[in-house]
Image (cartoon, rainbow, N blue to C red; front, side, top):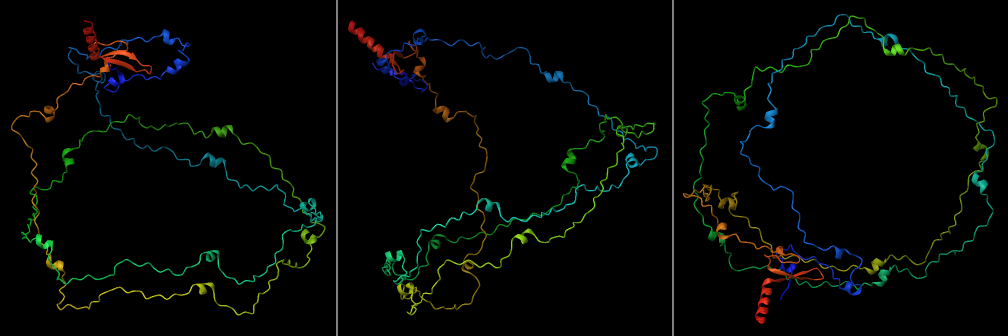
Length: 472
């Protein structure tokens, strides 16, 4: 008898077994878990979901007639809109009396010229120090010379000695990589340029002359020109806007609710006092004390125009330049005559170059034409412009096809494709430990990895009939 798992029986792809890890190694070594009592006390039961308290969706129906009244129609009633009265223009009233152009500021605050204040800062005087100038700096006093001898140099003095051999003038590359002379060029495999000529005459026959024949051209269709005909009716001078949308004359603008501007007048005299003039009164200020000027006392001794530098640092005359430690250059002279040859003139000699090969050209003598020049080209003589009428359109006219009979409403899809019944997934009728009446499989056992196996009813019934016949 073949057993199948839920993963194998499912045909919709939404049912599968809860896969678990194998616990064989844990059972062999440690045995069952004795710390947890959840698996023994709380066993799984087939709990059905509780019924929902939500009412079933039903359409609300009533036998009463439908009322066309709404909240907007009942609460918001139209009111009469009246045109507001027009606004009356106020007339200008000229004030009585003359205008006083003098202000309180001009009467009380007069312009005064204030002199600039005198400076309190004393005049700038230079302080002259009569003590002699000390020419020693802080470094000379703090870091004196201890008279240590100069250290001897350990590097040897190299004396230039000219080479005894003749200067070759060759570098490392020239000495290592010797020239092997001029390499002969590779032989060209290109064939010689020979002009291909034929003894047969030239054939002027072509496919164009054979296939395309000259057809007669019909005369050009001349379209008649339309003649302007003036209108018999006169010009009205009205547009579509002025004819359709007429102005509504006679309506008055809305009346303004703004009160009329009235001027406030008073018979009492003008009070020139302000808060500043009454609260802040001028106070008497004391005159500023003047400082008596100091008299200038000239010095008794005469002014010495010499500076400290001229007194302390004396001039000892011109300083002689330092002697050079470079050895004197002696001229290198020789009794041999001067050789005017160089390495380039000795090694690189001029090679004779062959003359460049001239291209093969066939010179043709110019022969002037015997006929006179017409000034026309071959295209102008052969192809003359002619009018060709446009081709007639082979496109059928767009007309709606109308039938005499009624529309059947049938299509090829409705005749050919009939609806088919889709069988439900067999795992939808399964239960964990029992079999439903509509299921075709019977529960057998569960694996350690979590797979649930079922046996088909057809094989179980066959086995039961075989056992019943054997006992009989």
